Length: 264
Image (tube, rainbow, N blue to C red; front, side, top):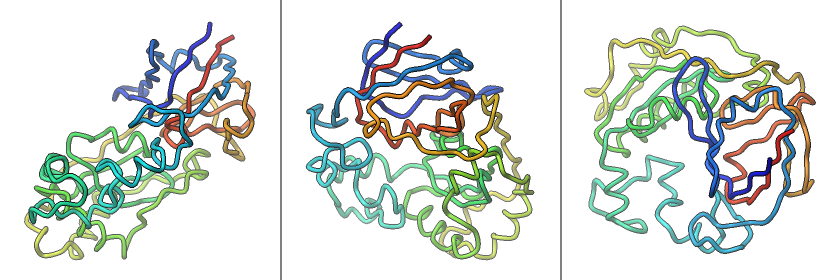
């Protein structure tokens, strides 16, 4: 059976294990049901997620023209501390920026390859943790806007990592940590203007991924370069498809690519 469509990040459902869904133009695939099946992927073309045109993808699924124009790709997306909607100052589209920035945001600790600090909208919990491949996470600050969450992250990353080692995460080369102890340890470094939003008592969330076999030496699959690949799917973690030969495919980093799938 063949499936074809432009890639966007897999949708997830919090369960044991996490359920993954790939949404294509005319198909809705539960990827968990494809575990231990042989999948062939073929690169077809590019398709910008914004304009829909067949143009090279620059970043985040967008062509270069759209990436430097649309509010969904503003610098404050990756760097929340640059948010200015709370000051009524526009970056690219103030209406959109107010809608996104002026809502509750969570500063969290997640353990995927190591303990890291991050920021996400409250409505994206626990989706954000799942996408990062974290096996445990905890909320430590609930700020009323993106800016306050962003300056808190900046302050805390002087004392804890803010990046995930994707190879270590995929190999499951991780250690359990007491995130409540980390939370209490980091409290003293939270900026004064965000301290009132500190979450003093809550529990860790544990996440179980559908993986039958972890790769020993994960090697990233570049489907655009290779044009076609066939492999047995043995796991899904974060936004990665894991294959039996240790190849891994990051669906999110390939957004905007039109791919044809066939399942044996």
